[in-house]
Image 1 (spheres, rainbow, N blue to C red):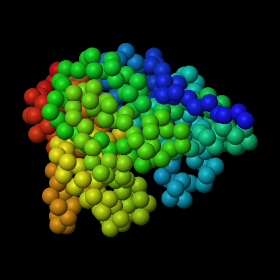
Image 2: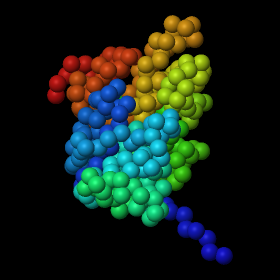
Image 3: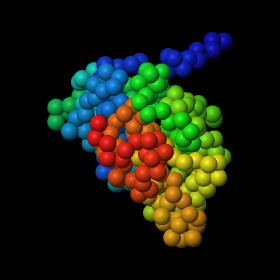
Length: 314
């Protein structure tokens, strides 16, 4: 009986590219625009060109899940978006777990020739054609591939900073995800390379509640228990900062802290930023370019802890 060969981590990780197609996130672009700046800064430091296309649209995943789109429309949207990267011979890199999950799921469906033909019939009238040659990665996976090179260029070591990593369920629950579902480590390994101290808390793999509570049901009673448990778990382990790899998770964990306090659910003042923003900050990116002013829970205390001037321009 032939056994299917298990790919090594080295084989699964993306090779270091000359350029990436950065897939913009609706939530990320609107809520935390500094994340895009952070990714471009990191890639620039690593000699990687960042390509974005103004014709790229929403991944359409949430619209499909909320029954606002027919499935064939979402597949056509995905085929069109992927064709933009494909014509440049570039792989797609997302910084939103939702975009990552939906793009991968739709690409899997579009691997079927009949399904792809249907999508191409819809987008062909606009001059697009998708051949299913584009790889889809999360930028966290690129950071992990580059972690040694990143560590060599650190300007502000994060020594003594206790950070709780949040992975997000839309990333970990993907079939074929590169990191380990049961014992994910990419995020914490990157934090260590920056000099930080990862905090292992009981709710580290738990959902933030954003997708179900905020997007699909709009019911606070669903999202708040998830947030309360997660934030309390991180706080009780002494976390000074939470880092995410998804702007949707960032919205829940950052924006909802004052609401929890007002409802008598507990007092929380833990800043929450994207992992890319933290890496870029450690590499010397000016805080004013990383969009920290968009955060509900401000980063002033973290910047002071690291000895970085809030208004530093260079």
